[in-house]
Length: 98
Image (cartoon, rainbow, N blue to C red; front, top):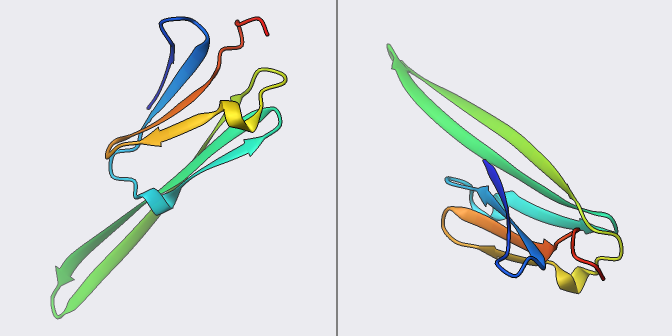
């Protein structure tokens, strides 16, 4: 899930992604001049015993989310932080006058 909220002073927008179960190496944030692209993948492996055989199934799901940036936003104005369950991006609020 993705949650958008304004900072108390209204100057920044905080975008929080629920990344429960996603390894750090499986997520990526790309900066483009007009947008941020957040992508990640989730892998699941299951095993079942069927007689004398083991059936192993691997599922990989890929996700991507694009966030438009206010015109003139610089790379240095975008911040990212991660804890064990969430990725939080802080960027200038588009309603803020430059």
